[in-house]
Length: 269
Image 1 (spheres, rainbow, N blue to C red):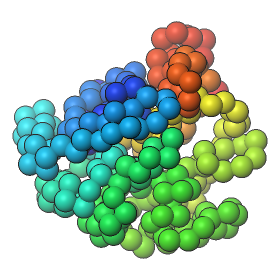
Image 2: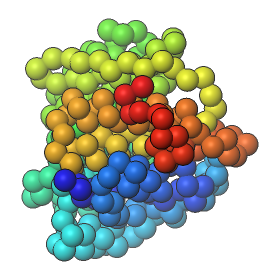
Image 3: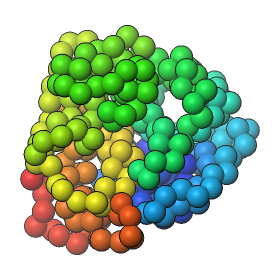
């Protein structure tokens, strides 16, 4: 099964995150990527210097153009930027019966804001209830819940609190945590599951969140279970970090094509 993924996200001119990272991930994982671009960012590994939001009518037109003709087996949502865009996207997806992977993008790796502060409540109210999976990192979860998270118990409690906002499942990503092991927690109303990988100490981590959510969406689009999709996504990101090309003076992009340049590597290492 090929698996069609509609990506609703912003463009990264440096190619490490956003739409560019998503397309690379979906394609390498054997899916078909279609897009609805929400913003054009001027950025490289040193940061974001400008953002141009796409008019909401154009974003909605892209979504309808893809769904009306090509269709989708999963939808991945990344950067939205404003409350107006969130409202427009929510209106177009409200009647769609397709699993949505919602990555609540708020801040770029270099620290630039990618979501207006006044849009967080709109995100929580309108899109979280539609999500099959919500994939926050720790700072994003803290912003959604308006509290700090430090311990494992904090993280698990936060995941269950986010469930009360409507998503069917939450993946609390552990990349911003501490220690030699990265723990990604899948939290559902049936219980908690953890996926662990050795932490790779490197500055080349630009686009890890986008890549993870896109990989998860591709697994779902290809018919995998949520648990299997999580395992595949975590392994894909781990290998992509390992095979980062070493580009840029700041947080560099991942090596999304790791399976092509290193056939000996496996997605379960």
